[in-house]
Image 1 (spheres, rainbow, N blue to C red):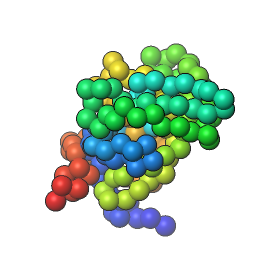
Image 2 (cartoon, rainbow, N blue to C red; image 1 turned 30 degrees about the vertical axis):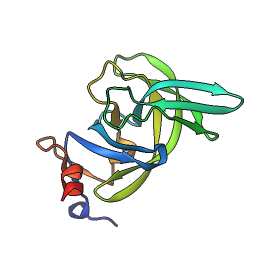
Image 3 (cartoon, rainbow, N blue to C red; image 1 turned 60 degrees about the vertical axis):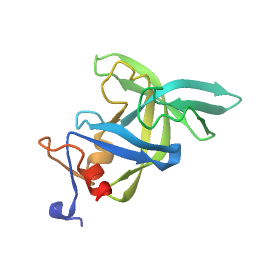
Image 4 (spheres, rainbow, N blue to C red; image 1 turned 45 degrees about the vertical axis):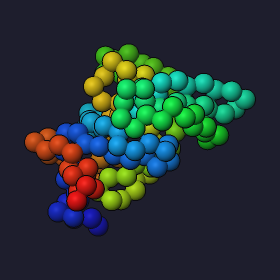
Length: 145
């Protein structure tokens, strides 16, 4: 059993790496109201049973412009923050926080009108972190030390 005191504290936002997607230093926001995590995609195309994705926008730190291909993916109905149901692609990937890799699912969405390209939801946050909204960039600060 994991003791609550053994969990790292994550703030309201941070900067993380996504090794599965070849992305580094991407801005993230914790969102305990969201169930799944979401990552912004510049483009998403399904071709011949393969999903082709370009993550982030050109002005976002961490943008590579490279196409990431997925052979394993799914679709899921997700209720957006505005209350609308949307069908989104969902892929599995790793996020690096506090020097540890976490495997989780990400829905793919256009978040170009949002401040942060990635939202971390309860499916990842629960049982892995304590959220303290007073803090920011705790994982990134630890990485820089």
